[in-house]
Length: 258
Image 1 (cartoon, one colour):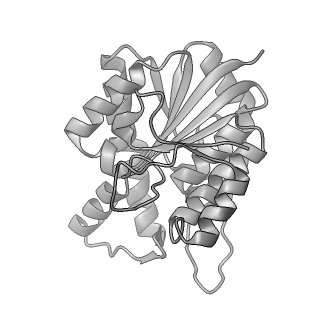
Image 2 (spheres, helix red, strand yellow):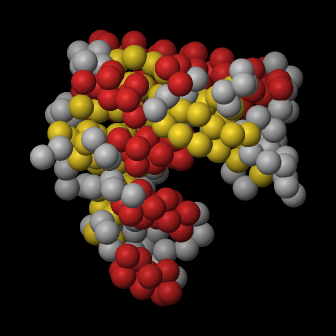
């Protein structure tokens, strides 16, 4: 039987709010067994860019990362946000270690080819070093991963945090019984987007098809669920979509199963 591993992905809206972050870290510290956290930090990057006179350009929710923006996201994601989380986890008894994908070569990416949109220094994940992450986990460390990778040629790349969490989960599922928890602004996938009490508890592939055809699931939720099912199909035991303040409640959120 494989040992368990919980991977939590949390966005910048939580990690950049002091009270919300304190609650998250307290709840995260209560998770039993091995664990790993992947975080965002986009709002802080946008705020710092504005102060430095660097324009923020977004296309379909994705940040255009030119040379100046790459310097900013490196400072914010790999520095300020990551180290605040690590320090906070140490204060609640979790021996955390902050990483970007370049550290220990844990996540190698390729620069996204320019098409209709040139995203600049944005990376698409090629590989995850399972051995490096497992070594940390087996020695009692909790990796805290910032959404930055590298291309093996000396360049850092801005990489989507959801993607990094999913790729880490897939890679580590060969060694662990992995539960991946995506935290976002709702309590789960909802039958009625205006009713937080209408959480769909479990979604199977067949149910997913029905929800899409009926229009219950649409828009930005479709790529989230596509990503979740891709993880399940590659060996991740469970994927949960919920709010960050509900991670301590094992029955909360929507569970994605194969």
